[in-house]
Length: 185
Image (cartoon, rainbow, N blue to C red; front, side, top):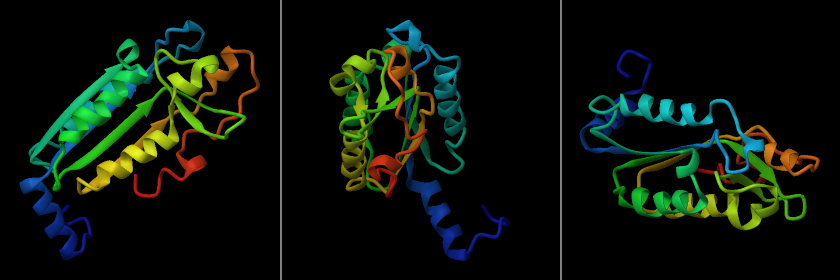
């Protein structure tokens, strides 16, 4: 960061992070769904590449990088929630948490809730098998009480869950904005 125009206080903060912070990365990508009509081309590879890119920051920007990658059949709602709670729950006060979700996203037309579509979810079971923004928002807020920073990245711009079920999609492409989950996440 030195030489990039950072203010002295910013340089000090980066140096402190380098000495004591661990980056915790949960990277989830679903390209192969249980309902094969939902399959995507690269979401699983994107998740692996994101994890790899941030792993390269070990010893540079962060003292250590811990990562968990869930792809395709591993990326069920239950496994994602387990990783959010158990894996990311180990992060400490000086640490940074990064959550990356790549796959389908869909918005429930009745409630307006935006969902990340895990491997085992589709339009007909989205309410109980999808991962809704209220749950992600609550998780981010809980994590923020224990860690330095939480970053949530979503790559969910395709409306496949509704299309596969023969419904007209109602999507707010690839952003947390429908529920305000991006406030600090």
